[in-house]
Image 1 (cartoon, helix red, strand yellow):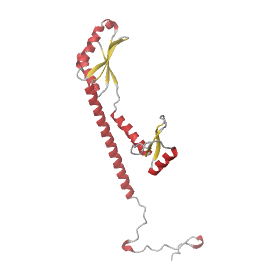
Image 2 (cartoon, one colour; image 1 turned 60 degrees about the vertical axis):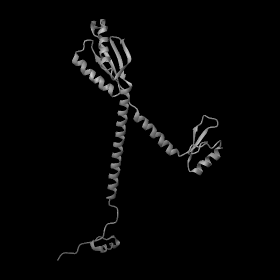
Image 3 (cartoon, rainbow, N blue to C red; image 1 turned 120 degrees about the horizontal axis):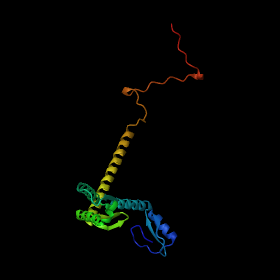
Image 4 (cartoon, rainbow, N blue to C red; image 1 turned 180 degrees about the vertical axis):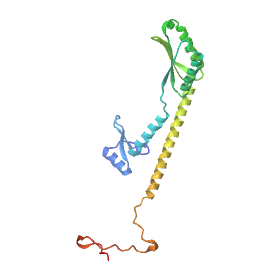
Length: 224
């Protein structure tokens, strides 16, 4: 059995362990049921679950979802079109994602695969500062493709940027929550609920008319 501060308490009966936990005002939690005897720990179970959830959320913030963007080129892609698509590839790589570069062959172009390989070689050369080849060029039907991914330095930078964005988003969310809470609290302070104030000067309120006995209806006095 393990105490609330991580100290070893030795082997105890279940009754003694429960009594010890109750004395501490805490819970008895089985943390390793597979060991012989099972290992239990005295802890605040509610706080333990809260901290576990917080750790999971923190780990999630540090993760970045990797996407694969496909960019299609031709063996004889025009230079301006090639430059435009390479800029997009670089931007995507710098965000921490991967890019699938596909060369599409039409008609008799398939007999000149070396042209497609030359285009892929240009892509490798133009992205060598930020990317590495993850899947080498290969044919698939009438298409040749390869996959490039961020190098370790770019990937680390993208993860850090993603983490900072997640932290900023969380702070903004907390600020909005605090602002809403303060606004709700202010509104509650203005809600009417106390007894109505009497006449000015502290004079007692005028006595109300006595009830009409027998439930009879009041009639106005006749005029003149």
